[in-house]
Amino acid sequence: MKIYDDLKPLESRLWLIEVTIIVCFTILCCSFWYLQVLRSEYYRTLSEENRIREAVIPAPRGLVLDRENRILVENRPSFSIVLQRESITDLAQTLENIRRVPFLDITAVLARLNKYRGLPSFVPIIIKEDVGPAEVAFIEARRLELPELAVKVEFKRYYRDTAATSHILGYVNEINESQLHYPAYKSLRPGDLVGQAGIEKRYDSLLRGVDGRAREVVNSRGRKIAELDRTEPIPGHTLVLTVDTELMKVLEEAMRGKVGSAVVLDARSGELLAMVSMPAYDPNAFAGHFSREDWSSILLDPNHPLQNRAIHNLYSPGSVFKLTVALAALQEGVITPSTAFFCPGYVSVYGHTFHCNKAGGHGAMDLKSAIVNSCNVYFYQVGKKLGIERIAKYAHLLGFGEPTGVDLPGEEPGLIPDPEWKKRVHGADWYGGETISVAIGQGSLLVSPMQMAYHAALVATSGSTFRPHLLRSYADSNGQVYPHEVTEGRRSLAIDNQYFDTVRKAMWGVVNQGGTGYRAAVQGHDVCGKTGTVQLASKTNIRNPKAPPSELAVHSWFIGFAPLDAPEIAVAVFIEHGGAGGEAAAPIARVAFETYFALHDRSKASS
Figure 1 (cartoon, rainbow, N blue to C red):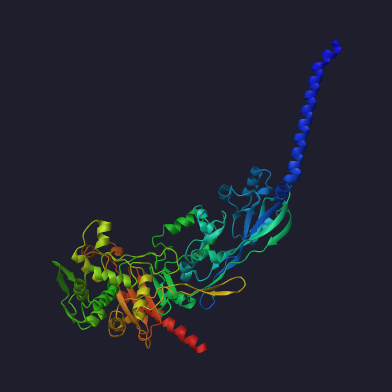
Figure 2 (cartoon, rainbow, N blue to C red; figure 1 turned 120 degrees about the vertical axis):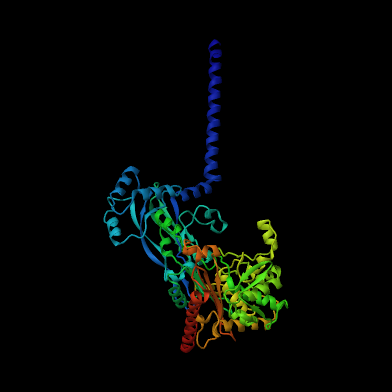
């Protein structure tokens, strides 16, 4: 009995152990059942994803053509040296190997490694781009010595006729950190290329295409063993622009050595036939990786070659604005075409003496002769009668003070001053003398060359032109063409056509009847135009022999259209510090008119 009693504690412990084993075994069986039956599909998928890797196949960017299907932008093959981080076993030894490669900069390599440290290790990092055949041969011949380095073939943008087209086409570069957060770029990764200016930026979504995918079988170290399948990339759309390369080249040649811009529009459709901004830059330089020194040299260039002066820069319009004042005064009944004022060379208004552009005066002037001779005194008096509110109203109607809507990024709206603007911005009242300055295109007025060309087209067509635009059509990878139709831009200007006729005939006289724009004349084509000269210096500076030339030289304008009876093209030319508009800008406009009509006649002869 005593022995039995002694075994009871042992039996209790054995029973507890048995229960514990049974419970653990049950839990283990349930876990196996849960993992292998209920969650089998989930873990099978995870296993496949660990074994299979998806690689991106970049899509070729779309081509860009001119209106005659001449190539403006294409893709060229390029060889790059890449660092395969998944092959690195000893980073210090790898860096030592790279130091022994004569054409690799270890500092640049380390900077690239740091920049893309967040990418998966199986993604190669480009450490040198656009290498030549000798560099490729060097790497290929040393595969055993340099297993971490490889040669990658990719396609890069190649821009033709860069000086003529750089500001229209823009450039591509790696997406920056802030852009990665934009909704339009949500599918992109660090290192991807996107348009950063011009057409490349404006139509990036069309040009970019759709990347392909390749599913690869990899081992435990992430190295590719085989490819399971792939989805080929879809190339970006091919864009056909409205510009004419031949006209662009001729304009670029005429503008070479100058600072300014020239714009040529089809006055009927709003198609942008040419736009040149000088100085230009080479967008091919952006296709690779800029050094800090190269980027600084561009940013510090005093002529700012990256600025598209046709849409980004704003200037006083000078005497070209007299066309707007004339149309406003005619429509408001302030003057008639026969209204005359005497110009002795000056006029006293609001207790201040304002001088004419001709020291001795022009004598008696009606509206046409005042436009032909660009008489300031005439328009001082017209501006006083009109008042700033009505001047501002018609300026907005005729294309100033707002973007034209041209399909390029960053267009500036310009400025049409009025009393409300001055009160809001400067906290001061408007005074009458400011109206007198605005009446001849001076003062706080600011316009762009693109607005000036659009203004010329509106005057030429009585407001029936469309907004300026660059895209004519685009085609997908299957060859399906989609025309780009523009329906915006036509304006109900509330100005009688007879007044447009009056101003257009005066513009014809500016070029063909001894006016200030006679250097723009083209025999047989009835060119109409208006010159403008923007004074930059005060009289004090003009009399100061130590004043730098940049403070003294005036800006030059010419705007116009042709022919008179059935306008086809509108032109605006602006030259910074070029001198009188008739001397500097008008001859370049003549080149634009001559080239357009020569190309037009050649096209008609060949058809």
